Amino acid sequence: MMVLKRLYVLLMAAWLCAGVVSAAPLQVSEQLDILARTAKAENGWFVQPTQDKDWNKWHYAVTDLNHDGNLEILLAKAGSFDGTQELRCEELNEGKWTRHGGIHLVGGSHMPDILTGEEYGQFTVLYDAQKKRYIYLFTETIMHGEFEAVHTRYALWLNGVLQVEELGFSTWQLSGYDGSVKQHYYLPRWRATSTEGAQRISSKRYAQLAKEQFSNSVEQSAQIKWIKAEELWPLVKNSKPYNLLEDSFAVFTKSTSTGDGILPHT
Image (cartoon, rainbow, N blue to C red; front, top):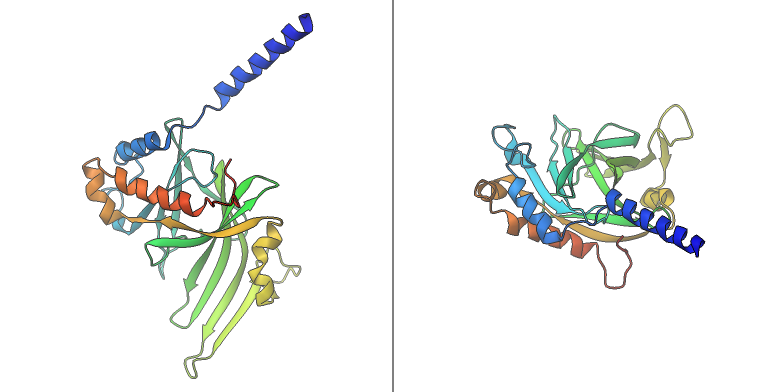
């Protein structure tokens, strides 16, 4: 009996400690309400005109990248010929903001461009069952004039910080004379077997780099619904952005949840 009592005490202590360390996430509606109310508060997530002269180039989306029940607000700013894109992620944890800076595990210094010219940003999501993580695949495009470009493929996931890994890149060149296209594919320099530079690979292998890096993962196409700053700002000023934020999250969660359970949620 004494052994059973001691076991009960130990189990209760473990349960109480678990409750202190990791409280259950707030309901989605509660989190969206906090998002709506804190947009323009002190250190709020919305980039206001007084904070950035290019404030209207920012886009916003509500996600749950790691599917832990705590929502994030993504902030993305498109790149240009003379500048790289920007990406920020702020997660709501127990009613408090946690700002996740993007770090590169290896490779270059650019951030993946997760914006598209469309309202809905199309991307690929992988589920790594072994490490129980969700990985998002995006491509950054840098133009060199009108007829040359470099496309870099990135994997991104949220794990304490926004982690970024370069998978590979391709070069594209359009002839100004006959319209022919030259395209070559490479492993990034950090993965190349030669120390002299990037290793050229086939287009077939390039298409499989994500599966090669994250073996035994399942994948599907998904969407992010971006909200333009100019569309959101009038609602933020009047503390009424709730519906737009809710719509954004609904698109994300619906596209990363399947009826057949391909991508499980934690």
